[in-house]
Image 1 (cartoon, rainbow, N blue to C red):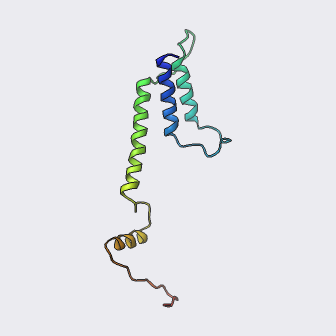
Image 2: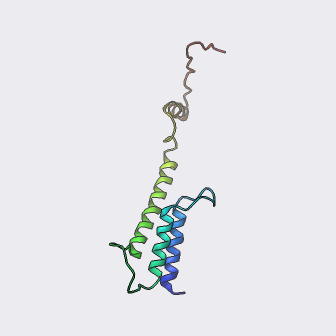
Image 3: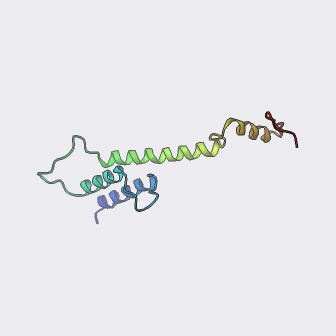
Length: 117
């Protein structure tokens, strides 16, 4: 197997690792999977004289740049979730946890019709 073909297979597998997994093997693949397979197979195969090509065929360098972008986006989301743990919480819970972090307990709020136990 040539080095170029090995590099393409490595690139294809790296793309698959970055894409979200399929929930079940019975679900059809996303159109992006097919485009990746077409790109790898068309790049690995020698160009034939009668083959029609799209107006812009992506190069291996562009695919590597796209892969680097996807990896950076995944890392960015991971860091956002790690350093902003209250990002997805509602405001009431965020305020309660912030107060607890500095050692303050918020008073209980009573709504109409509730009695203190």
